[in-house]
Image (cartoon, rainbow, N blue to C red; front, side, top):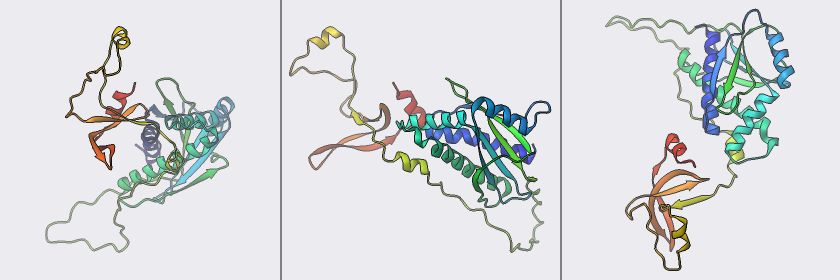
Length: 281
């Protein structure tokens, strides 16, 4: 696989990871080379004519060949991406759509920088910014995202520069011989997760939190018989953990405690994403 195609396909996969982490749903993604003799200019004009003006973002990497990736998203694409993320957080303010989409790009390129750092065995800290237009001629790919309920308009991933493969590793020297130290070598560093600006937007969103001691289903005739003093037996024993529910989703389990005369829950277990999805109504 060429370095240029690696950048495009790796970014596509990481885009899915970021969308899943922010919206709770991962779309089916495909990164394909243009068919036939299609050009970047013609493809961009066709997509923008059908789906709205294209918003371009470029990100440059300090790597051999000075590669850069340009992502073009027509208006219908980036607004739908942002709407899904904001909707998952219970936010209905469309004015935050553009900022939310750009945050998706920042996170995906941050992950791509770390992935490139592992591939080239060096620390990679790229830089990105909005661009007025894409380069006139370059290697490009069409990125398509499909959710269960809808397919998003296509994105365009453009690769510029002359990206190069990482150098082939030299075999270990024979025993008793050591290679001279390279004073310019840089030790790879573990990157800490970047603070999401979208999270700052969502931190103030209020969500209902409740604790479930259990549940039971009753026929309507039994419900009508309930009076003061009636006892309803639940499906959970007194020594079982209770469920902490946030926005109708079970996020944790714990034991009931008393704190300064008030009931509380001491968390014992945090639910995995798959377990949370299984508890949704």
